[in-house]
Length: 442
Ligand code: 5AD
Ligand code: SF4
Image 1 (cartoon, protein in one colour):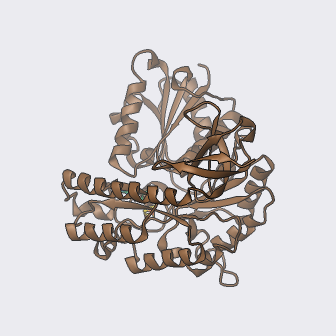
Image 2 (cartoon, helix red, strand yellow):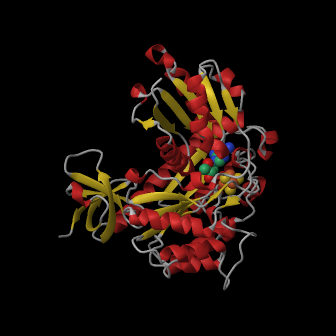
Image 3 (cartoon, protein in one colour):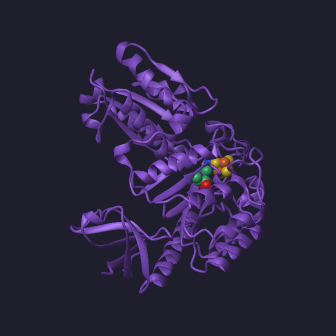
């Protein structure tokens, strides 16, 4: 059997980052990465469990791949769904021969070697435990882009009632600050200009394990160290929790020149009653005061969020409170999710009580608001000159490029491909709901 591998990634940025690491370590072990499933001998699905639909999609895909000409391909399911369903997955997806949880991904080359040798075997590894440090930092040298993800921690110690992540990824584990800095220095040497720090609760980095200094949390200390790395021009992070968003972090805005003026801060609900039921441990008032303090420092800062509609017990009045806070903050981007009951979470016992059509209607109402405020924000940028980090040719249209403003708004403009990886000044001329259209200033 040839060793050509195709990895399909579902879910969050953490999964994307782990697929990148997996690619790098497979490359070092004699496997060749390919860009489409048809030319692959081995197909790995790096999966997500956060909603039932995400699981159904990956299971459907694994069964679909195994049909017809593809019957001979070796299929592996890795990541959160592998951890959540374990060996039960073999029943849902009979062609699958490898099941590996997110804390054991670094073992995959070894397991694939064994499966290639022994065609009748299946391997399952959903052990939990410390993550391999080298694996977390692995990058394919040839694939360092202008903007890179850097994972700084794994797992989550919170117990949000709806969330499966503590089950699939285990308790929080923090990487050493020196290791993170070394990784980012290396990325900068290879051409990266922007890093996005990743963690389930990224601003919990080092909490209760590393000391605060001059009132600064380990996370803020890390941001300050990255600020000093030559070559890195932009720092982003995803996703923080409102609880750890203290004054030291707020004061970093405006003070650390590389820290981008965009914060993705999950609210989940605008009703204190529902937040309590979700075990989110903050109230709307606190959330609002973070947003106000950030806007006092940077008035044009972009604020985006995650909202869940249809959590058990969410009344029309609760939902109206979410709409009201949405209108008050005017989130210029938001992910709206319909509640999905997850096994072994605290909310499982509450049942899935809000009818599907009510969830759908609430979802639509919020999506309309996202569209409205996104347009309004984009409109406010027309006429401005923005620094855009050029990432790639635009998907549609010859001779056009795309990149992101510091606020993380996508900008499209005419330009030649030698500009990819550079930061250019773009005058914003017009916009759509989600994109800015502009022109390079010569
Ligand atoms: N149902 C719906 N949405 C969920 N999320 C997490 N768990 C669930 C669930 N059970 C959403 C939250 C989180 C985002 C990553 O996914 O909004 O912030
Ligand atoms: Fe899930 Fe809450 Fe942890 Fe986020 S913070 S991953 S929502 S448990």
